[in-house]
Image 1 (cartoon, rainbow, N blue to C red):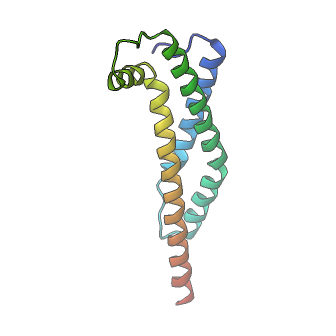
Image 2: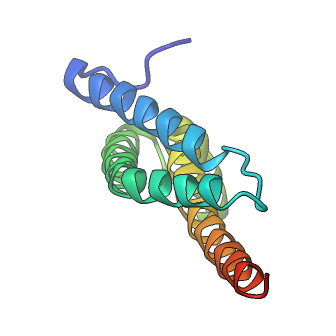
Image 3: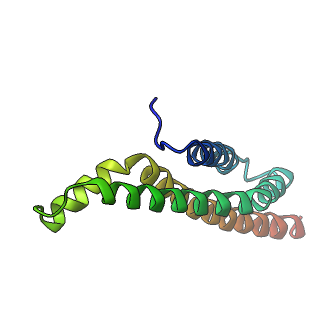
Length: 132
């Protein structure tokens, strides 16, 4: 796969952000037996432990996406093009960083929904234990 950035430092940050994304995604995608209180607690703990990592990765992707967009805007001949055409061209030019930024935002939302489901399951299990 080709390089996204000419600058070695920015390319390194992009690679680091992709690794952070991979780690975060693995935790969010973990399947949990909702009838096992220990698994539910472990997953809640794991999600809490990677929350900061997800926010940091999102911020890094946003920074890199903006950097790339500004660089591409400076070199693209946009004077003779309409707004819709400009948007399509720019999105094509920054597709890799924009993809990861969007994906990271969706993963963070999924993590929040997953935490809510886990808390609900834990509450239900607690009520079941009381009724035994």
